[in-house]
Length: 77
Picture 1 (cartoon, rainbow, N blue to C red):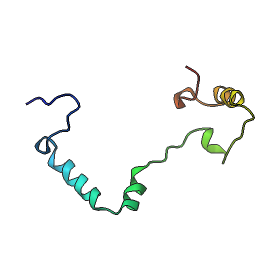
Picture 2 (cartoon, helix red, strand yellow):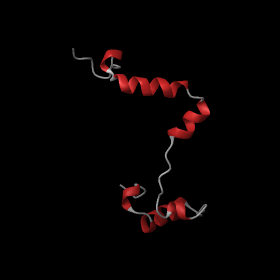
Picture 3 (cartoon, rainbow, N blue to C red):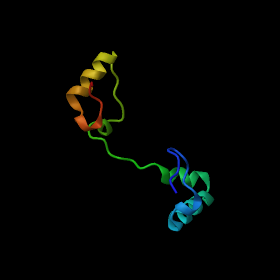
């Protein structure tokens, strides 16, 4: 049976393995869930220094365009 667009899946439509994993994760303490929820991805150039400061937004945008790879998404549209 088709569900309306945006409707939550019925419990019997969710694979038992997925449901078991979700229920196990839900029993973990919140601090543990947060620790496993975020994955750090190295971002070239951005992660190479502890911080950077710019005098103006224009300076920041120019630095991004000149120094960051396009795939990071910091360029102008």
